[in-house]
Length: 444
Ligand code: HEC
Ligand code: HEC
Image (cartoon, rainbow, N blue to C red):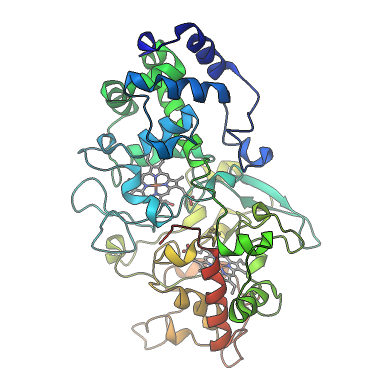
């Protein structure tokens, strides 16, 4: 508590500055581009306060372990929240149970079905693959943006959090899992805030936001969500420490196979992966290589029969078009039905350690995920089951009326049965070798 701090006057000043400062310090912004982060970060941290608060560690709850010294006070609070297993109902599950720091902040909480995570209620499973949280702070907030890449300017959906972008920003996202019955299952915002108030780091909360913070649970929840976003914006989530980053910096080399994969990734007539998994060819700055352009696309990945919700043959995950309230936000040029089957382009950073793959986790192996691009249209029988009529049921995870939304124009999936795939077996191996260079240090 504040009263136990050694230098109360200084700390009062610090606290006031914490709440009112409008300027981002270089410390809290380390590794970030202001433009992108503006959508995520609302309050700023004064670096001298990080010092003050860490010297306040004698107070107990604000104490930090040695490996937490890089965190600002709000990031530290975000970490406490992220790892707090009391914040689920029943207790026992934290954000980190599904977003495991050792596995690039994704995972399934020990689920019997690898594709979908186990919720805090025994036996309740989600219906989508847990995404990595790394580099998510770079996502613009959800909206329709003008795409100026290919000649004709056109509006397209971009940004946001979740596979369908239904949370516009990271702070907005945080209440999702806390209140989702399939995840942490808290009954209300009040319930979450009461737990924090009664918990071991309540004084960290009041030190940062003031004694009165718990008076209005909605305001308290907004601050806690923001703290979670601050933590997810810290350098732990954005280390840029992969071998590919070192290659960009000129401090590492790629093997011949990895280099061949890199070239295929960039080649518009071969992999063309960079068309969606964005990187700036002329740039050596790792932050220009996020391996996503944050847009949405319909790939038509096969249905995953292991997902419990899929036992019902009429149940489909429609992705973007099912985002609540989207119809009211649509520009005139876009029809809601055209967005069915589209999911957010994920970053490929750390992809080698974040399987199973795609929104429904249908492929266990990275090689299959890449090979699917090459032969979805030339050899559909390899990927999709046969229907009752004996024919291959292509794009079987979407109702028939939406199957025309699937992208069949862009390389590499612009082929027809009988045509040569854009990538042969060796080239698929080379692409996989390249993707393996995107793993950050310490991730497995
Ligand atoms: C039971 C497992 C589980 C728990 C617990 C959980 N998540 Fe998630 N998280 C998921 C899944 C599954 C998704 C994808 C859901 C979707 O897209 O509909 C997800 C998506 C996200 C995303 C969006 C990432 C992206 O790529 O768009 C963020 C951010 C996130 N979670 C943060 C958190 C935070 C913060 C907490 C704790 C307050 C948390 N999660 C708790 C499973 C979990
Ligand atoms: C037209 C856009 C587009 C192109 C081109 C593209 N991708 Fe993707 N990629 C996506 C989308 C969208 C998803 C998510 C789809 C889903 O889950 O339904 C995805 C998902 C993936 C995944 C799964 C990642 C995960 O975390 O689950 C891998 C691996 C991948 N792409 C690799 C590649 C490679 C390699 C290439 C080039 C051969 C490529 N992509 C080309 C849009 C694209």
